[in-house]
Image 1 (cartoon, rainbow over the protein chains, first blue to last red):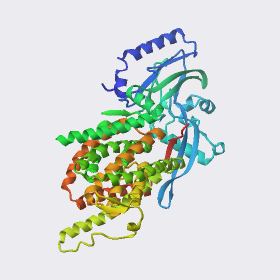
Image 2 (cartoon, rainbow over the protein chains, first blue to last red):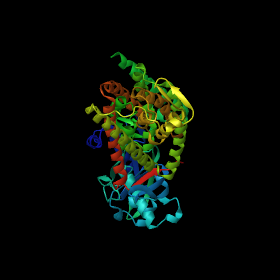
Image 3 (cartoon, chains in turn brown, blue):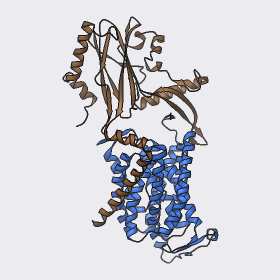
Image 4 (tube, chains in turn green, red):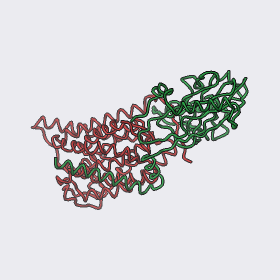
Length: 269
Length: 305
């Protein structure tokens, strides 16, 4: 059976028992003020594990939450960090060839941001930058500190963000937008959908939820989310990494057997 | 039918991959070439990372060559002795090629090297084959025309280590097949191809082999070259995706059987003219990619560690 699409998921969300139960639980917590970790704010994900199986084509996770009073909410999801190099093609002798390049360290492999109001109504620029809320506030450090702040840096940084957006790994609303929307279900409840495409990197993710009141951050909560390979795919991947020589040998034997089998089968027909 | 590839780390349509394998397999059986020069650009085009495309393609070519060589073997069209001499050269070539691949990858220029190698080799070979086979077809139309000399002597016949290859009725220097094998091995590692499109014309024009033993012998040699390349890519770079290879070879081995049967109905020069046109088309497409302003000027690559 196929996984339900994003639209189906939205259409059936009120009938789905688990998210509904979570919602009621959160509501109850919010009303009695039972959460002690983050004052004034509770939030949870419909799932804490994204399992990449052989039929994986991407997955949507729903984040639910409740507030104990007025306020606005921001959600930031970040994937494991890695070093990346951005290269620019220039025309050399009539050919388009990789020329200039810049290296970035600690680049989040995945980044999604959502807010309940536009960024300028949420908080001042310094606060937003500190918590990396909004695509423009994503911190991308060049490997060579001398590059920081130069025109070149801005050009390559923008190219990095654009490329990641094209790959579906940076999500901040549509073109020209700095953030996705968070839906309010009445004054106290909110929810937002976080989409993970088929090419989502594996590892531990962090989901941070921030509560703002009158431009001040009054509460924050961080939840982990795991993206793991499971089943045959996971075993193949692990085997290829840890037993590379055996994996190569098996790949060759498999190919020889398949080729020979086809030759024998087709001889008779 | 969507399926997740564990090493390429992407989701593809299984039927699309099977179909691509089948069509390329058919052509491979028809012309006696591995078909890698078509499959590697196709895989990159549908979004498979180039390194995984090259590594997996080597694996797929092992199956395609085994299946292809069986038909030629039964007809006695494999020159084992000549194949082994070429294999010695291609083993050294493959190891050198994998090393060069890594050097250019670190420089960020592997895409350019792959693109230029394709354009250069495919272009020269396509034009050589095309002019030769058009001449042959024209001669056939004019039965009165002279056939020219059967056997030309040139500098290549003066090389040492003269060896007799009975099956191919040749008495040539062993350095020639050794050198051709070396070049083929380099191409397997750098371009993700079996090298058949280079080996077949080289064996015909440089070695002067009869066209009956060319396809079988080149396939025979390619089995071992691609097996070595598969092992090196899996062991050093972790870029062989068995799931993708299984899909490709399921389509490929079946296609190759039909292809090698159809090859019996084609005359040698007709087959060569068709192959030349196909090679030329791929060459023009890749040359255009290098010259026309790319849609994405920037590329992003993760650094290891």
